[in-house]
Image 1: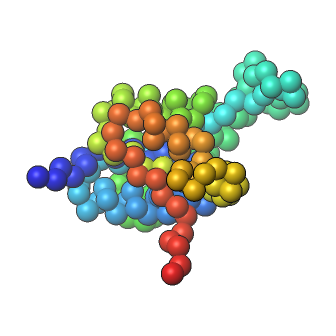
Image 2: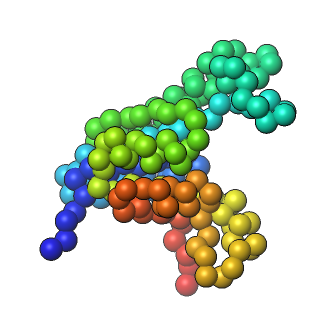
Image 3: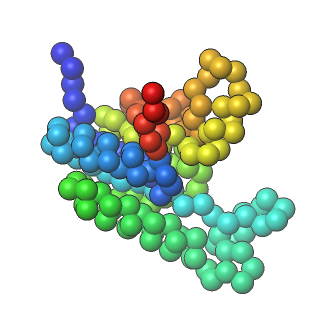
Length: 162
């Protein structure tokens, strides 16, 4: 017997793949009457030496700027879900390393399905430099697939033409 997801987590970065991932998350959640949670992971700014600057601010950047920008992006993604006819059960802002934060939240929420974008243009560059047997997905999506405690749906922005 197939069990349909009752709790879905959409991990979004606002990129091109996020649009298609959002459409699929809305369709699956509304079609199955499942809870839909959205997470966006903001990144703290790093200095030119690669060291994270206190509070995530670069010189001249107001304290909390990175978090405010991340929250703004998350709110925009929530509005996109609502505009597409979906209901958002919860929106979650995390700051830090994308894959680790998404996997941790999927464990906390006990989700049945995690939906992520494939990684955009970086994935194409990576595919050129990897073997043909390896799927061409971005680093964060790859780490999420490896670490998630549930099935992960990796979505490409547009369907391939035949």
